[in-house]
Length: 308
Image (tube, rainbow, N blue to C red):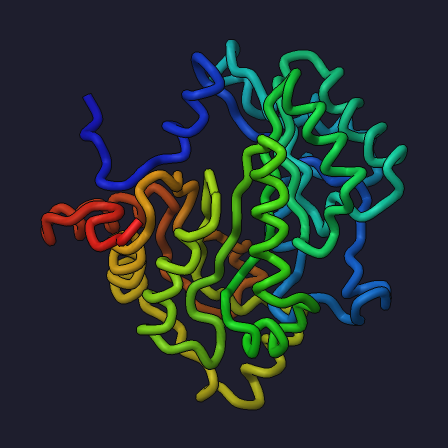
């Protein structure tokens, strides 16, 4: 029997809604972002190259249903009884006219064995009419809205060309939770210019938000991004953590994170051919075990130092 982990796992969150295994399948809805098309800015976030996290089956030249069927084929070989969540992942998945958005989401939900939606978006792209729709939808199926928060520091947000403030992100999370919709956030630990102590303190700020889930990942420098070019010019601006150092940072963060927030991941993995640094040569499950081992050695757990 697997030992209980010293942090709140994403599976514990999902178990409130489902019996048995559910798996997210990434979907590319053909979206762009307001900081790419000129509405907010140009060029996108300085760290972002969407090709670095697309599964092979996630192609915008195929319909939502086709992508989901391809994803199901990929996973069902090992778990025939698996059910699925359609994960609208690429770019800003609430950026469009309401009727078009509804058609994509409803196409996903009409696919056999798809039992809910996970929608990734920006905090400045959630109009009230769309929240009304998600609120109604969440009363008949599972809905999780994931906001790219990335950091609580406004100076860093400007530096990485996010095009919104932390106050905007916090307000979006609150507005979503008030509608009874499950809500998550993404954070990048180790963005340029951010000190270790500031990153650790960020856990208390995030804990004040009505979040259900959280994704953490290390800063990765990916080919084809503005940040990669910045690194070439001025590498001293960047603090790229080794695996053990980053694991210790994650543990310090978890100690201060409200225990009611389920942590879905600690790292992300870019394809080897696109990744500049850091290259740890570790699988995600290996890093999870590293974090858990360190927490047990320190006799600590998520929320041990939380004030909430």
